[in-house]
Length: 280
Image 1 (tube, rainbow, N blue to C red):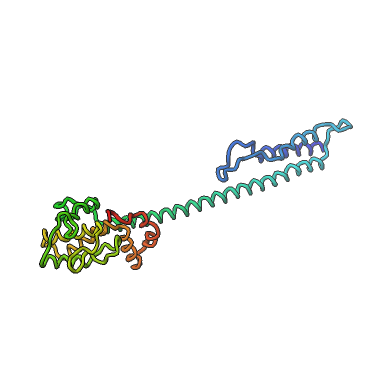
Image 2 (cartoon, rainbow, N blue to C red):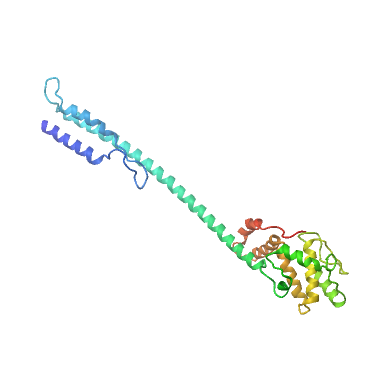
């Protein structure tokens, strides 16, 4: 019986020191959970006392049944602890996965918004004029990049309100009325045209004065410009006066045509554009 007792002791000690992790020193790489000592090491002193202290008759204890009972008491808590530890690790992993999934969703949303913004930027770059207009730009020293400066410079030529009025008559006046009847400053005022039928101003805002002054200047100084060309130049300046409204019209047209990504642009980005450039 003593032999069986010693065998039991060797098996238990081997089991304890080969299957029990030591005190917490590091974190598990997969779960980030700290390793801790399992509770059944506390039974070691009890086992030693049971096996080696003499009983009341002065004989060593060799009760195999009691020894087996102690072994079971050590093993059962270890399984309970292991299951608890595994559950904590699973919960930690699930939470980590949820956070990663949310991050991926946010990243996808950011990428979608960035793509929409780049598309909007391209449309703006191709639709809103930049730089110095050909022919008359260098002559008048004006640029689409300095809208207020252009307004201040060209409004002087306005046939009605300009300080240096350009006076038109005959065929030139007819051209002036024809061109001015096809465009208006509707985003700034309620006028439907730039001019009345007699050639007088239909609106007194700075944008209208500038466009009338430019039309008169081109008719008189550059007869090679057709009515359509002059009207095109006026529309180019109108885009710089009202970039938001102009782009909204363009984007709505593209959206009706089923162009991809336009709906996202309409929901957000035009709000960052100024409604009006230059005084009214």
